[in-house]
Image 1 (cartoon, rainbow, N blue to C red):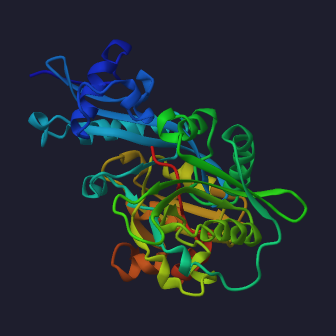
Image 2 (image 1 turned 135 degrees about the horizontal axis):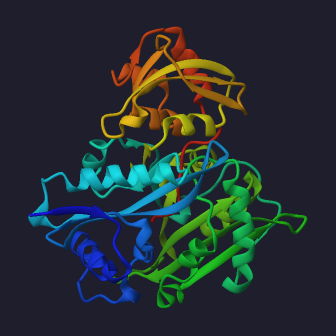
Length: 405
């Protein structure tokens, strides 16, 4: 059986979607209106395996700009990865993933990120866990915050009025952060227009401070409980909550807590370092749930190390092992004043020996060098280098991504 690896052609995109739909249990007759917008990739952003001319393995990647400790970095947003069951265990996914990473490197994308449907697969390919998702499920009656009230006003606005405000507010919110995707026009359209019917029940709220300046926004949906009980009989789902300062945070939070008819508020994908744990009178009321979010894989080590701002000046010599992408396997000398860095290949003895998956966790700030060393996941040749690495690879904000893709 001849096997060919290449991007899908325009006339093969329907076959590409059929594979993706099968893998992710979407009915084969589902039309475009029922498809995830993230499936709609240009042919050159796919990589596929063909057996006897039949498309059997799929892979896709978006062109994203992602904030890495505050710096805008081009990355590949990997999606639609899967193989038809009759063709699994033959190495097809390994090959399309490797080719996809090579393509990302050629496009100047130093790393790839994804939401894993099955994390064990991607750990085999050098991906490291880079962020967590956190959901809250709280009763508004127990949502009282410590400290002063907000100084401004939160108001429901139309999406026509709110979208331009939300775009600017989110751009300001994302700028200093870590692993947030910079949304372009296409991403905003996905947020507001993925399915017109699904947005009929959504509301949007903008918070303005005492001077009238927009400083935060949220969007949510209410629904009545199916069972009838006296008292609060609604559920609220908050799918966006962004505040530029603590005053805006208080204003938006108190807006939610003022819904007397709501039994439970679910807040989806809040940051790991969200302020609620610090501000609530009763933090247990959040009923937090957590799970793995973004997984990150470095496609070009030298470029990635040079792009990231560091939280402290320092110098390290790092030996990187990479079984999948042999172009990354080398020893690198990293020298940084914090804002600007130089990275060169080196023949020096390494301070740290790091598998590429663990380097992703260092770069993202998800794990410190000391944590990785305690877990036996990196080798330490110079113990003093751990302190240097911990200071350099620290991040101002915990890694966090709100957008699925």
